[in-house]
Amino acid sequence: QVQPVESGGGLVESGGSLRLSCRASGNIFSTNAMGWYRQAPGKQRELVARIVIGGSTDYADSVKGRFTISRDSAANTAYLQMNSLKPEDTATYYCCVIGLTPRGLSDYWGQGTQVTVSS
Image (cartoon, rainbow, N blue to C red):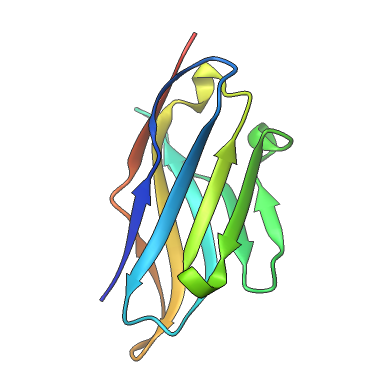
């Protein structure tokens, strides 16, 4: 069983910064991709950023230039550095790991961490 564990959420003022971490624990051979999604109340879950095994990254237009995703492959850990935060970034942020295990390739989701940006 693979379990992504997120940390680093909290309350911050508009313009502030937060750094989220996601560590995938369990019997995992490799993490082919790691990504951050978010869901605000009454809205659909949306992709924020993702990074694949080769290091390529992809960002939502709304966070480009403000957020940076990175990873430590050896530690199966991904980070999301969030700068210049806005109230509209308020949401629950979920880590998703696409990992290779003895059962094959599958996606695994974390429990989520709350990010609240005050105006």
